[in-house]
Image (cartoon, rainbow, N blue to C red; front, side, top):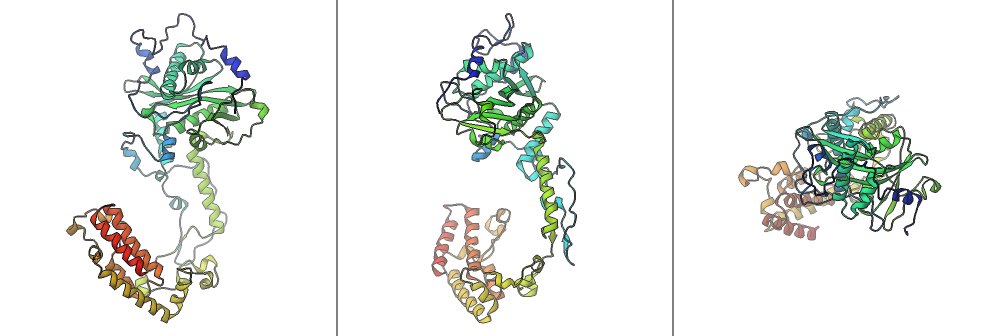
Length: 493
């Protein structure tokens, strides 16, 4: 995809020599080298960050490939977090629920629980909303905006001193976070009177505002779309949800000025972020509406986000909560997902047939055994469950193998349940949620009905090895014994 000259090129070039700063305005750039900046202008820099990883998201110059990268959402995609970025937040342990964005009507004709069972509430089915990271970040950002520690402000080059200070702060953040773009190009677009920006401001301890990041874009009101030029967050504020909130503010601002679409050119590093923010490679906006108004670049992907007028992008978690609640209410009418049956004391019953499990008959299956209740592909489970002779033969085989396993030289750490006090593994049962050992396996085998397939027996043995590796780690001598034992019993089985 080659570069081409467009109408916007000519229009923007008009500002290459004049960024709209009136003569005599005392607005200093950080590179002017004219001494210290006034206290009022300190917010335009935010505090220049020290060396660190710089994740960027923005628009490339005409001579260089576009480089875009954002903060927390890009980190979520890769699963990595900057050193020192994760901080302990007491509020993260708080259990809370959020209210849906609208009232959700209850199910019209929900299925009634049979005797002995009960219906679970929608809140219990969904669980607390605090379990979702995206809800925690949304709540944190909403609270920060309410108490005034974080402010989003729309700024344009209107010759006002305050606006110029914010724009210079944005320019400094973009230059810092987008090192592949020439400073004159960044300055030209940020100061262009046809562009506007959503600035992310943070209120410091003494009350001063500092520019942490922002999104610079050019709206085309007649064509009903806007083109995102730059979006970047100071790296010290990343992995905290600012990127998602900034995009949401940009979408709401675009809706307010009558735009229906947002377009941007993303490089490979930025595509995952934009996908999370609702952008797609499929362009639904008619080509005649945008072609000739934005530029094409080499090595980038044109992406589009269609803005829905009924969606409140600042409160998406509330919308998702309403959708999930509506889905649960609908499922109450067509399924038993909300019905809870009492537990089963299988030891007291000495085993139980599948037909006798509470809830099985209620789901409407007929001839349950014919539906393939099989623990193995060969159907051995059904045979062992129905034929006493086949079950006895399986039990004899498993007992023989278990005896050999217990007599193996590597079996001694696994003969009995872990004694946390004697072994010093005081946190063993906090780490291992499903403990298993050879003594427990023997007790289950002695029941005569627990291991109706060889696969269930093998699963317990493998879980014993997996628990050992999870707690002790690879390279530990106990782990080596477990792996040696695993190799032995897999040969036997």
